[in-house]
Amino acid sequence: MKILSILLATLALLLGVACSSDNEESKSLVKQTYRDPIPALIEPTIKPTTTLMTPATTIPVPPLTATAPSELRPVDQIIDTHNHLLRRPPLSCDFASAVDIVTATMDRFGIQKMLIMPTPGLRENCDSKSLAEITAQYPDRFAFLAGGGTLNPMIHESVSSGELTLDTRTLFAQKAETILEDGAVGFGEITAEHFSFDKNHPYESAPPDHPLLLLLADIAAQNGVPIDLHMEIIPQDMEFNDISPMSQSRRSSNNPSKLQANLKSFEQFLDHNPDARIVWVHAGWDNTGFRSPELMGRLLKNHQNLYISIRPFPPQLPLPNKLFDDDGQIDAGWMSLILSYPDRMFIGLDTFFEPVEPYQFYATKNFFRQLPLDVARKISYENAIHVYNLG
Image 1 (cartoon, rainbow, N blue to C red):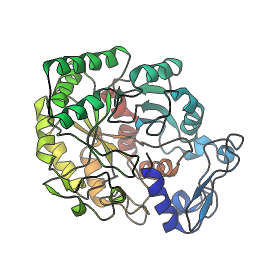
Image 2 (image 1 turned 30 degrees about the vertical axis):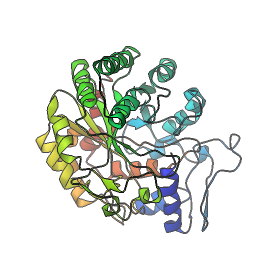
Image 3 (image 1 turned 180 degrees about the vertical axis):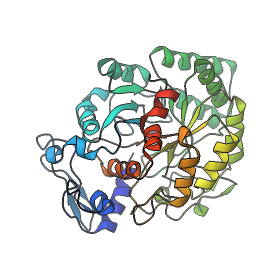
Image 4 (image 1 turned 60 degrees about the vertical axis):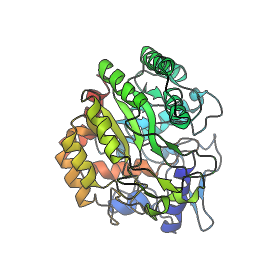
């Protein structure tokens, strides 16, 4: 999954220069957070030279020990509710190989706990049993969601074939129950509309009200666990070229020429079982241009079972409906949304660790520093404890 690397390359081009280390607290927050060299989150002995490369510039990455963790914590703790230990597609199920670098990153940025999950795909892959081994060894640092490597392929196979038998529904339900028996705190990452960003990155699309997704909502509600749903919002049928010109997904030929509307069916999915907690992930990373704070506010008002997972990106990245304005301040529309629904939001960084891409961690730091402390605590960890049953 190379999208973040593409976005970071764009960021590096926009930055153009690199300045001094982030521990210079006397500098303005925006300059400190985004225009200074990025501290590495891996020891130099692991990777002697770590840089972010673009044709125009190279940003050097100093070692992890450059700044004490306490200097980077705007709130007392953070639970990252959405992340992956390995890139897509994993070359193996050896999630343990990434644990050291991930926990070092967590310590660096004051992340007490991380909810990990498999990247969603079209073919069956590593899922709950592999992740359960990690959480058993590190119960205080990790919990897991699953289904991206088992349930998600079944949903998309049904969409592709146009068939859904009773046997398939039964098998799907059995796999979902097995995931929960393995210790998952929810289902994820499940995709309803997932754009491709390069030739090795698949396009995935399923109607949000597909029978298997409705079945999953019922199972989630019955067991009191949430579903992490990845869905680019499409309010009406449109040409792919009608999405935001800023979307990096335009670079991939895997995406279709036409997109089918999914907003209405998303609301039908939310209404299907009001007891099913649906976490709409990746807010702040809008790839159509239609996921505005106003739209999310309307959906949150009309659907009490909807939650939003925020994925902060630095203000220099050219994204529609982005979290920050160009000066690094939280956008006014976003701030209104956050203060209106502080109990319905989390942080879900959805980043990668080999190598570490730390821009989102700094954006998250900037985000929490601008919120009232009680709101920051709700979004940083209190809501996650409640919704994902982490208490």
